[in-house]
Image 1 (cartoon, rainbow, N blue to C red):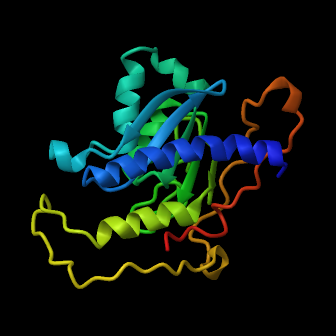
Image 2: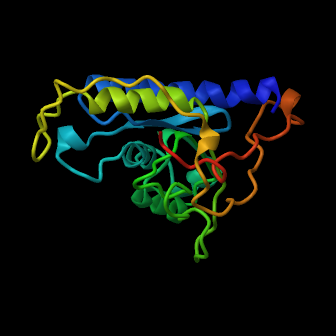
Length: 214
């Protein structure tokens, strides 16, 4: 992967991480995302399930609601998603039905992942076009945000658990210690880079070899 392409993808993942950090400060599960079309962010979202008491208010749904208030649904056919955590089964299905072009994420979701972590909603046979996924961009940062959330109190949980004795673990195992749970996703399409960098090679696909969250 060339330095120019790496900088392109990391730029938008940092924006997604900023949304996840805002979610953490708001006592929400720290998952954030941005939707990018032609190098510009057209939508942002973070988890809002605690504030709204609505389990469907995941970051991707929040962002898409804002996008569709200004753009037609077809805009997603030319849009990429950057999200800190692998989309869950619900979000992965929605993204496929809406025709997202590609998904980039930070860490894998080993409990509910829909793009390789548990199921392959993005690539299984379907009437809807599959989409490529790339995981592992700022994986460690995404994992640490989740760990910070799970050691703090969540007063809006159905049965709040006492977490005062929990300690924040800082050790993160390397990605290659886990065996793959899924088949390789489709080949990754090149991102919309500036014309001067159009020949930059695409990101190496990682999701198929290391789909573990921690």
